[in-house]
Length: 303
Image 1 (tube, rainbow, N blue to C red):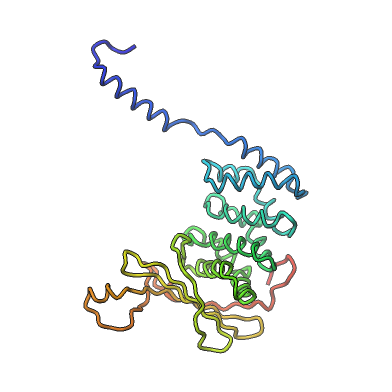
Image 2: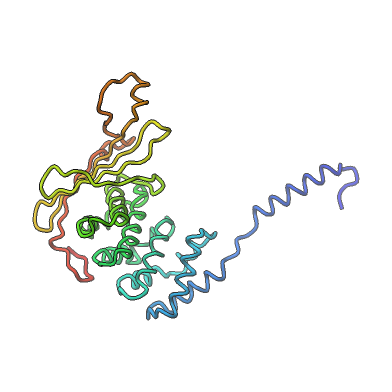
């Protein structure tokens, strides 16, 4: 009951507003289906029994892909990340499914910041020596996503670089020259590791260029024009300068459309100029030298 002197229209408006607020402030109810799956993985995970673990991994993957509210936080609290690392290292029947899950989890900053302590960084690097193309795609995608937000992932990047991520990615490019999907994700990972971040949403198109030196591979990626005026261009050169030793150079340019140059009265034929990141001009050009000579084929990744 309300006050008899309060207008009915005011009562209705207030009731509608209170209903809207109550809906907005409803407490979060944990996802029991996800909790059960995470609990089962935690209990059964050490033995890595495929028939028992697979449906639970699929449940977790579905919740993360659908961006269910609180799913990422539940994964962190559950403590299953070391079990996922164990599954990757085992190279068993669950490894591919685990790599898919880890690649999705790498999108979530609250989850990926625990990858190092859980052993997932070294586990992903061990997967990069696999011959399974699909497995390599998901492992490289996870590494790319871990390195994308470089202002928050500096430690992750340093660990990946120290443990030999770049020579492994280069080796994949040379081993699978005609696999476009694998090539694309490896090139994006190299850019993100170098600090020249490439967003998956950018829609960058990668092509092989013409090498100018013996033993060199050239790749260039072009993103669509922004507002019809300019596009970002990445130029990656991989040069073998010794047995199992490579130099990787990455350049970042901005290419302007002819309409932009005509608009500003610039008659130059070349429409290329260096692209400077605000506050960090050092990112305009990166040259990285890495060696794969001392990288063992075993699970130990110490160089």
